[in-house]
Length: 377
Image: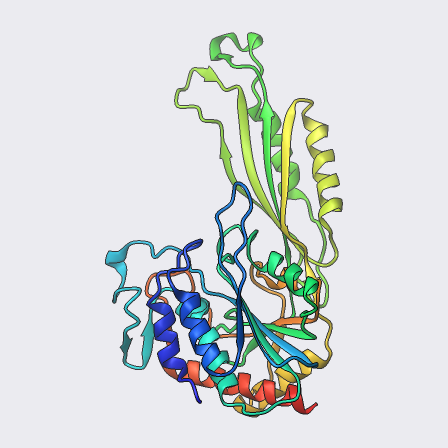
């Protein structure tokens, strides 16, 4: 039985699956996968203080080698509905373009992979899908816990493709072999509130915060390397919560983010940030949160499969890159080699998110080529 990737894409888009609500998207996917011989296991997870999340693991075959496709069915909010050309959950096709929230990120990519697998009758090994509903959210009750479940049940794959949209203009341009790490910092410098005319009775925290931020802004962290751009720090907000001009505030807070490459690690960056803060302030609070470490998948069997599959279908030589934000590949890399490859990312998270119908078919053909090469190698 062959599955039409366009119809499956539309069925998935019609589910308004804002994180953490599944809205039936996993039911749609499980029905399609069951029809082509997959055994589907729902993996709901919960943790106090976070939303409950439903996830899906589907596998066809029981032996090695085992290739996995990882993705997510949750989507970001639509923004202003009035700005959309079509209802974001109507999955309208106009002039060869499919519109809808989650089209490129990444429901159509999932549909392309499922359709590709549906065209394979026999193979000696296993194919699986690891689909979460918690990628756009806090990513606590999704891929991380699913991977632990796979390990506990002896189902860890040999390699994994994450179907995030990786191309800028045309399918086959780019695949992601790594990602930068992401460190978020919240710094609050404490002082003593008081009247601006009696400054000697107060302690203004703002000048100290400015000195710290100046040092952070001037900090040349590294020069990058062959695979990564230089590590980058961005100050994203400064707040004192002061609505008047005659009061020295008690606290001054700033937030910053560091996207770091493989030359750095979170502990080393935190140590330097702490020293800079201590140089200018004896009374402050520094909160560091790391949402992902940098990683790199070295060239090997997986990169060769993807390179060859893209070349066979498109004639293009894919560029392997580490640009962009974080993805769930940052968790999968602890278990097996992982590379990201999917649709075009030009409209992700935007109003009028869309995908060319021809690109969905093209991606399906590339995935099919990769899978066939995997089992013939």
